[in-house]
Length: 235
Image (tube, rainbow, N blue to C red):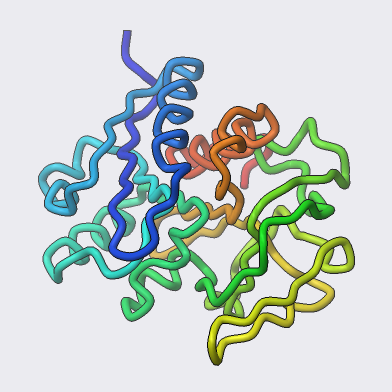
């Protein structure tokens, strides 16, 4: 029986390597079994070439970091999205390829700094995006809360935010300092971009996140929308 769609999960790092990556891959495998889609996992950038990408509907960058692609691979990824397909970025996907402008716009914001792991209050901004329909309007979550650049596109649709009054935003990394993003601190969003679809969530730093149904539903909602363009409403 044909599966719903096919996802390429990519976890290459050239910098910080998250302990939670293997937990994330295992979680994606469980989601693939639960929701009847195909999945391949790779860390070799050469797999992201024009010919190989034809078989996939969505590429998932799971806690990737640093500069990892050559010019040919970048062109293949751009063409993949331009053909009407999808991208999902998880956690440090926003700390990847900072100098590739097309990619940073695909993600929507770039990572700047983060404070220590803490429990904070999250707010659901759009319950009609898939994976968030059963969540309360506000809930507590423990994670590593990224501070981001300003939004790089005007058409970003925000679905989760974090209340900075509920945790300490302070951090100091040499000359870099965290002061928070103010009254509106986005954590997850989606957009139509360059002919395709992009979903990003900053959650997922800790291995334990990938055992929690709240996060798995949020993650699958993003993967499903990015792969198919379908959701609770016509997004």
